[in-house]
Image (cartoon, rainbow, N blue to C red; front, side, top):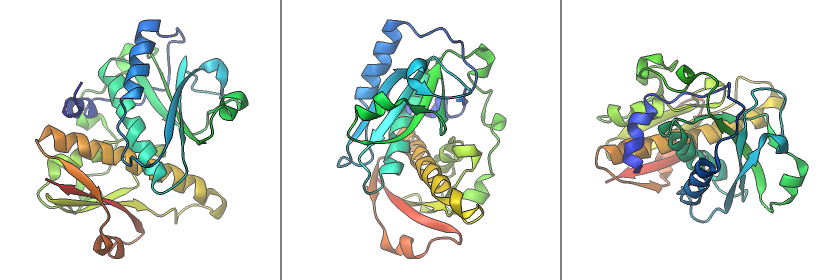
Length: 255
């Protein structure tokens, strides 16, 4: 599938929590592995690694799946945004091929897997066939529990683009994003963890930042769908004019 083809998947994807424990066949796993090799990073200068690991090599107590993808990254720059951007490509690929998946913050690879990477472990995504086929896809945008567009965006003349980001998955459905700008330049912001206890703030901030990367990939998909391209840039004016309780992340220059 081309990136623009994922636009329709965005409007029906669902985070699958319950799986058929039967492993996927070798051919399907090979196709998934090949797709991982073709992932496009948001930042070329950040080293990343994505490993497919079975349930037996994952520490998890619930929401078990037959397979997991573990993401490892060089911890620099916007590496968490980059992680969200990259792995969401797999979420849409899997959903588009009738395979369930879900971002998961608690499970982690077992120690021997962690030791086999020189990079920092970031997060896992579970995947496999859903326990019930009806739990794979939604009927449409009305099935999503999301904030209205007016609460997450002040972007002018780009509702069709931002709508794709509005439907993006996020940690705890927190929807920590806000967008400003216009059809030529979209600025992305992430919410500050101001409403959580101090000891939880770093974890909340981590997953919020990953979620921003997910939403940015959805923006890219929508832009491609409508015949546009985007370049990632940093905008100092946007940085210094962040909406209240939000922090500047990145901007998309649209062509």
